[in-house]
Length: 100
Length: 242
Image (tube, rainbow over all chains, first blue to last red; front, side):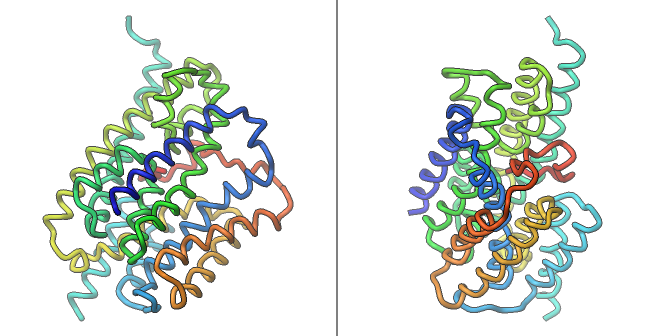
């Protein structure tokens, strides 16, 4: 199942890239298509953050992950590089769990 | 025959972007095995999918208990922006045949950002290839390293790797939050996803957020050019590999 999903994502992602280089611009150069395509990563990434941090099966919880996210926000405000943002979030959650 | 100095500068910049992105690949590798994928599956993702946000989305949905195909669909929806990059770059790169087919695999945020601003086709191609190939090489190496290290770590929760996933998504989202319409979209998407978590299967809350993008897109009148090709200033210092 996982391998099939990887294959589907790989082939699909490639075709999306190739389509951009191959399709005449006029076909997709519509304001609505551009707006929705532009908003898609924003909506999906925001939802992924929410589910990843507050989801626990089919319930919502507030645990060490939320503290990790808060620290990540501070790191981003301080313009920390990606790897640092991810690291301090993990470290925060790990330390909190050790203390608990 | 050595390349002209301007080309050497472009190549050097491309490699620098690749190195920055490699650091990000380590976290992808570690997070992917923490989500339950094998090292081989993790490396296959980086090789064949090769667009970071989509890869993170797939393993993120799986980590949250979602079906692999929910993750695949989320990843593909995130991959649609590469199509827009291609539309912008096609006349500039002016490739056809097998060259275009090969170039498509390395059409990502970074290679677009490092070529879309060039004035000649030659410089655009140098920027695109040097960045795309450098990112491809280092992203895949880093993925392998991160996956092997992640597997050696044991229970990912001990190291807070589950918290790292949310932070990774936030870091990807962050540079896009400067615009009011994007902020509204993000808030609505979070609200909808959280509302759906208790009542739907895992994976569905994230997919449902696609409708927020659709709704806001339809509801808002056109303003500035929304194509949002990333320019070099938009790339966060860690390298947003997308």
